[in-house]
Length: 369
Image (cartoon, rainbow, N blue to C red; front, side, top):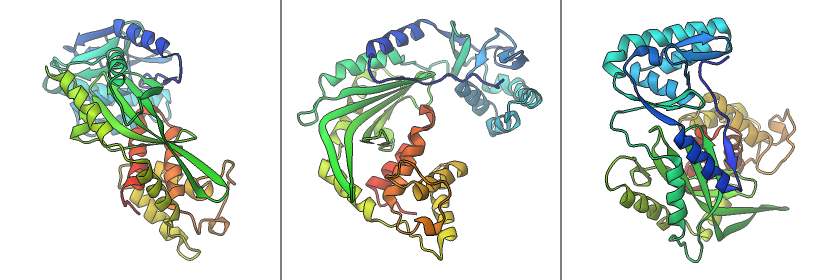
């Protein structure tokens, strides 16, 4: 049993007509419900589900997070800490704290907001403001299908390579054929990278619509350029069409050249992480702290640096217990770059972008720990 409903990511690498059909069905199942009673979002434990007191809906993870942030600073961390382990007693305690805060601050912070729900699955996916304009993922896919016919990067036309639907979020990865980068960064190994365009959208306001330049390694590891005010837009506004086309244009105009990317990859492969037999523990903590300063949790930071030191950029089958004498000396920022992408690839799509942006910073800027 969980406090919130979790939906597995749907990944499409072909059959995009099926994606479009699924998105249209999802849009038809969408309900926008005015929030005017705490019982609509307060929860109770019922057999194997945690459902709302009124309506018997389940709350998604993003919905609980939005409710907590709108209600009381710090509430989400407390609720998650109490519910850890999914023990029924712990969940009951978490539900009590959550319900108490929702009821106490409802009139001030939540009343007259809008719930975005699915009538078929009976899940409340998110909480948005009364004036929020929702851009359905089905509509975004249609817009991008029309836009790519007009986009050219040199002689390249973007091709949809993969699409991921994660709850109310959708992530589109476009490849740019002809902009591949071949690199021999280690003796005996040949790397292949490709440039692309990444588009992400949330129907519940969590990040709205955003675009980034992507660099993808042959094994699927991806780096993303950071989001700024210029490459993210809100759904609201009568001039959305103009802003949407400006967003795509902003990204395509700033694509790096292949020679520039190759030069930065070579620089990464020759930049030593700074380990020696005498300073390994101290250096390890310094790098972990540097990763954490970029918004990455401590546990994730330690797993990433462990992957960089144990597995490196090219070892497919790492030995479980390397020490400093087993090869930490001589590890490079390329090993760390690949380790970040490897960790990001194995987590949910909704949590991946921040890590992929960190790997971009390692590659493009002189970010060092």
